[in-house]
Length: 397
Image (cartoon, rainbow, N blue to C red; front, side, top):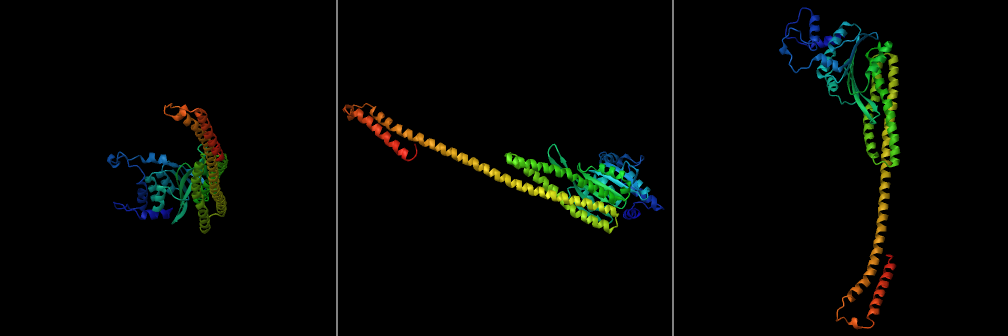
């Protein structure tokens, strides 16, 4: 703790000459960014639109506590109190939990605990991939938590940034998952594990994130089973559901796959820095669970690919059956049209003859012919019979 504060104090310059003793200077410099101005300060120093820092902290600081030998010794209300009490607590550890903090709060943490600017930028912007990076004595971990929502049947992803130092652990949460209050209760109920330091808290957070994947895996498995039933039932909306679930599984893969390498790197670091052997065993167990989850997720994606192929095949078969039915209906319709056309042609012949002889012109030679009527009737019959046999031979009738 002394080394961290000494490094931070070395980069600070004061506009006024320093006091005779360095200690008051250090405390004054620490409190300046986060302590409200004194009552006698002129009101013009604080712009009217500037939010109250205490209210901002109460909205974003979920919980802040100091621990010593695995037991909570204080619960500061603000970041300023946390910084002050950590300095006053030898061999203490600060565990600060934030949810969507403001830029001012993150910068105050960076100034107090000497956090790297790149890690601070990632924590502010969010939307980072899971990763593990070390900046000096500080470990920076990005995790993607997940939870399954039963009502809409979808997976909700959250993002968690963890800063781990020698005597502090800071969590910056973006999203509803994971529930770190349960992690804090679990650690406080096992003080012998909490006494191992920030590395033990990091293990508990990793364990909670990985355990949170279990109900997600079960929910996705149920969705895949339902999709298989809908595919063979011929549900027209199943293609859309397959696509949406495929996108969720891709996000799930991006959350779980990097964790395998991260945990192996973390285990190597635990061995290098002489972390408690029991804690290393716990971390190996978490790594096994992550590997199993990652394999299940990979299997889900393969299964959805196969289901999508089967669905495309079934849709094609259904379309072919519909086209065949349409073709058969068209063929039957054509046959009916042929029959109607044939009979219309047959009936048209006597109609034509009768129409001609029905004009009753005086100069028509057949009007005075004695065989005119039998000749007209016979002509009608010959034409009709001839057309009937022609259409019959061509299978129109």
